[in-house]
Amino acid sequence: MRSELRNWGEILSTQNLSSGRAMDPVSRWLLISRASLFPLTMTSGAIGGLLAVGNPDARWGCFVAALFALILAQAASNMINDYLDFETGIDPEEYRRVQYAPHSILSGLISKSSLILAIALVDLLVIGIILYLTEVQGWPVAAFALLGLFVGVGYGAPPVQLKHRGLGEPAVALVWGPLMVGGTYFATTGGLEPWILVASLPYSLLVAAVLIGKHIDTIDIDSQRGIRTLPVRLGTDRALFLNQQLMVLFFVFVICLVLVGRVGVWALLAIAAAPQLWRALKIYSQPRPEFAPPECSYWPLWYVAPVFSLARRAGALFVLALLLDAIFPMRLG
Image 1 (tube, rainbow, N blue to C red):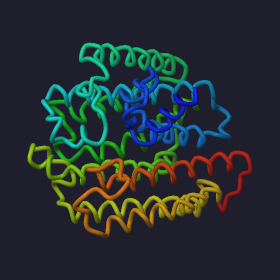
Image 2 (cartoon, rainbow, N blue to C red):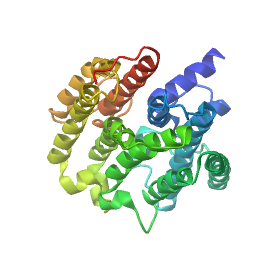
Image 3 (cartoon, one colour):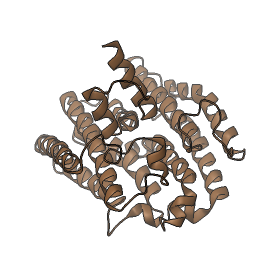
Image 4 (tube, helix red, strand yellow):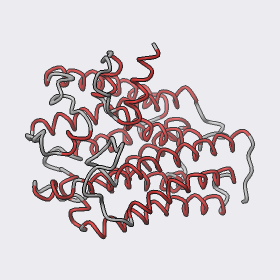
């Protein structure tokens, strides 16, 4: 069991499994579903649920169901993206998605037909949970889910292809912010206050910054393939500057939410992620290395890693702060 736990921890941290390690069924599933992204989704869902603490209409069984649905929907979206990448003919020797992490089909983790079946089964589970929550809390639950589905499928699939139009990054901010946080809050309470959507923005900016960092790393290949991501449209220098601002804005937004009394002073714990912010800003202010630095497991990606580390640390601290606020509330307003 220790070996399996090490496998799972490595995959959740790096989206890779070291060569020579035995592949167990859970590890295979974690790789196929790209489970390293699940913490980002769990953080958004947790924020939505914890903001509902104190609401007399909160139903915590619905919160658990909504959080489970979000994770499953993330898994389905990741698998759909892998399937679409395979269908559009990604070259495994050139495209960096394949170089830094195993592609579920191209690496032999799963066959094309089995991946389609897995997508269908996971989507059926998600639909079942959404139908239940809609019955209990009302039609807006389905509306949130349909908007998320539209963005998730339209991210890479024609004719929408948000990624190809420079709209993928704003779409991700919309999904991991207002849709996930607001949707989880509504699924938990049966209602939604406008300030909840505002409170969803800090973390959504960090998740968008993760994707922008990844697209900066793939800017040359995306440009050659006609995939006009936001960094392709802006150019490397302006995209780097934009991401620096988004990372800083997370802390600015959190401090503003504390000052206006919408979240407790515990939220200032997020400032403890400042070392990760400083490291990311330092990397963004220097030229990309020509060759892989020692022990850089995610090469040829470079700019996405520090933002991903910041998002995970800052998001975890923000969730901890909301939990402490639920137990020992302290507010300025």
